[in-house]
Image (cartoon, rainbow over all chains, first blue to last red; front, side, top):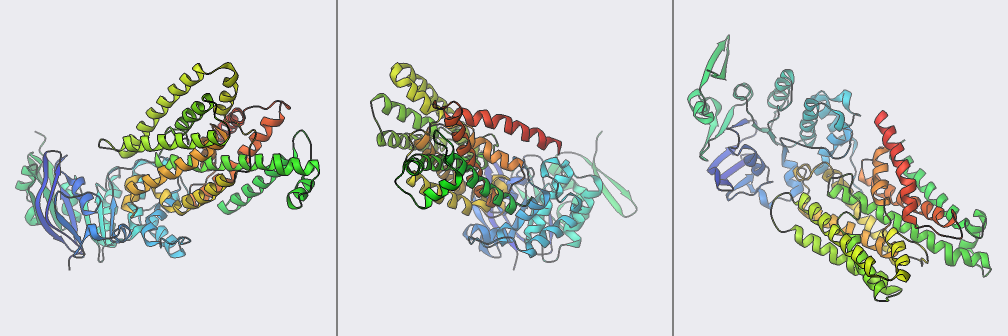
Length: 258
Length: 323
């Protein structure tokens, strides 16, 4: 049984076709890279997969049930999403912010409060994102990269089988770009499905086993990353020439700046 | 200080300010005697002053302050703007226009309170209805619609003041600045306060998420569009009740939730009850000053809330920056 699936999905923004008639199954244990040029609909597709954006046609299924028929709270126990950008209007400590990720797991009854287990999961999530030393800091005083790791810690505390991240590496320094993706796809990936919108195709090759390419005309190619994301298709996808650089066992694709 | 201790402290402050407010005035009464008269009312003058005049006024001040503080906290989350106050979306503007019109037409007593409620409800529905036209950021559209409608009411208020007679003008200005003179026991407003803050408290965990952003709340299983409607009408009812009792008392609804946030309360499960206690105490204290500073003259309590609130707020703001 697939964790998440889409059948004949069509997404339109204004008069631009973003996704036309997409059908694909996402399984537990997989990590998907969603690739495409600016404005190709990566964010809209991710929001739709998370049940937060309506589709023009087709449906999204969570464990073979229509996502729109799930109670919102139940959905939030299955699917977590990290958005591209957040802005903070009110102060909050890092710990309280991460603990908020437990919300869908706390009963909605009148006197339900966070239990010690919820606090422990929030602390674990902070440790995994190397944020323990910032637990009592206000989120408004963090650097961009620290703030980004807090967003991802919220998702880890939410502890959902499906994890959708829109450009998770924004603002992260080189070491954390690797360690965050490594953590999500290797260390803590048992039974989880990761879907990332990425701009760096080399990160996609290093950490993802599947890719979903969104072309300008709304056509989509999805499948194992090595068959779908060839140099030729990526050149067509980004409308730019790529060069291949090999060093030991690593092969990197870079734009040809000439 | 933990939230629990902070709240207990605020509770003691509320009781102390209430006792102080009842004992101070043209006739000074010992706090001990006050308690005695409240529990065992007798027919002597002191007892009558306390139960018939001062208790209703203190309770009204407390209720109005609490209503405004909770409404302010709700609207600040709804609009995700720490500068929002209960009057920002035109609730009090609508009430004021209806109230001044009723005064101008010679209305008295219950007619005035009733017209204030009716006026605010017209404004609430008008803003809500208009904000639903068009597409895009619903939060921002609600804010802009409310602010513009409030500006329209402001113009009508000036118009009404300019055509009223000198005899009526003084009462109108006092009401506009906020006035607690002649308060009766505010039974129905107290019921609104208890029910309203209970609903707000029930929503507290959702408010915690909404304060972090509508999309954040949606991702964690809340329904921002439905919450927005509930919070808007709840805050409007609280504000309208306060305005119908005491006119436009400024500053309480803006400054009290903000002070508590500066003092470190970010969880709305604590913030809502703390708003009730601090908002109530703050207005009780302001009203005590308003009726004793230049006795037997009375000052509009709205003037005092601002005069006390501005330096207090600035002090806390400067201190919080140092930490």
